[in-house]
Length: 213
Image 1 (cartoon, rainbow, N blue to C red):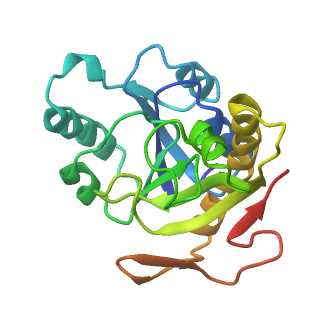
Image 2: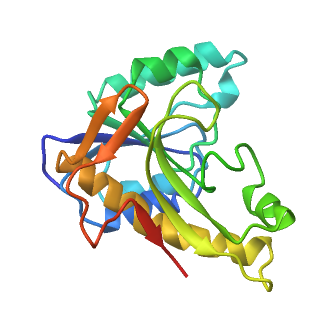
């Protein structure tokens, strides 16, 4: 994946979205995968593909600001053009977020601005919504806020439970995140204001809304 577009991926767990990004063979260079947990299953998966892995253990810190500063120092060793959150289970401090302003991307298992916070699939079912999904957005210091890039949508069935709905949303995440990274690598994301980003030259194979099953 040789390219001048350098990406650092942050993970905390199994790394299924990281796997989807790596499997897509995007025109980017993943220069490091970093976790706050040494036991994260994503780390050996990345190492098996020859990618540098690092751990900055959050358990070693009692102060969020101190942790984020330590994490920032490690990330910046790799001079990334983009930092990608792929199941990184930390609330990031404003100083960290602002350091990577317009360079920090996340995928969220809800159709923002709906269902911020935890237990999104359960809450979607409890509210009786007809559609649910995921959102790729740039991160700001507002919880689950920030400019939306694209969304993946699935219909909600009367037969759904939290697990079945979550699995269908995850399948769409694995399609959507690589498409957004592809668009970013091709300079097709355009900032029209600090609060809004648009996709240049939307194509049939990647509209801003991706419909799943």
